[in-house]
Image (tube, rainbow, N blue to C red; front, side, top):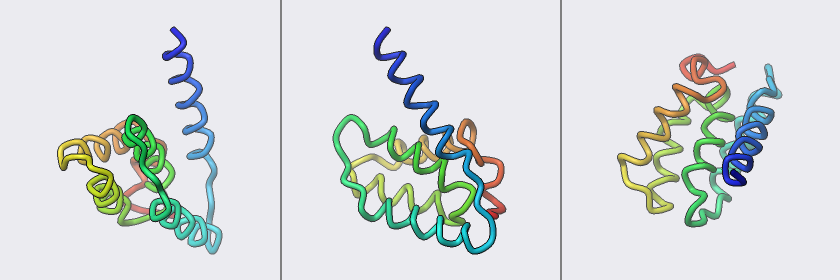
Length: 105
């Protein structure tokens, strides 16, 4: 039960973060911040997939190359190619901005 509640709270936080919409120069700055977040990311066993999914949800709207960046980071963190591609598919299917990933703002 507690795990489900924590998962729901985590998902709500992901949705809130991903819901912010940036345009113009702000979108470019946000995209650069997202890329920096990924570079500074310190993966921890047990949270890698969740963190990458959340990052993908935020990045899908602003970072054109988000799938390849996510897969590269996942590989550096020790995830398999299959795990990385499943995260990308989940972002596209369930994540905020998945439909916009082809046309970033």
